[in-house]
Length: 191
Image (cartoon, helix red, strand yellow):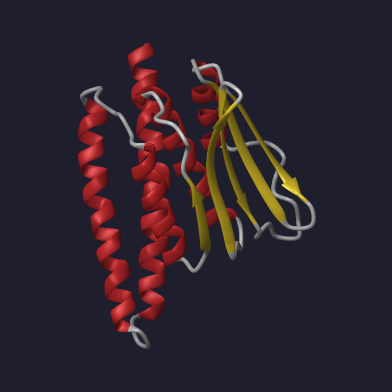
């Protein structure tokens, strides 16, 4: 039962945000087909590369070898946000982090960026991983929260993410920051 739950959670965390991102890239490419064919071609190439990555990661999940690189995830999500027209700032941690913690942080980045793209009208986003005082903190902030506040209850992605974060001793918080910013923050002890 535990293995089934791990597989279901990993599959959701892997496919949900990535497929949402690829859908967005394809929609952007479709919009640019007539006026900016080179931009459309680039976006389709990125979507195709993302699909190839999903196939490879799905194989690793099926075999229990799912380990994400935080640095790779930050870079690919920065590219994704920028391809959607969102100016993105990334701050990398000042220390090498343990692989299990990197995997949880990478998953958190992936889910947070998927939510930015799906639920906001962001023009700017900041992805920051900082270490200090025996802890590591990931903050994802965007400036595109629509006027009506997003639902207070977290969706499946955030609930699954909260379970992963607490399983390694961390905490997850997310809130609207007036006037139109949104902050998702995860904190973990460094052992």
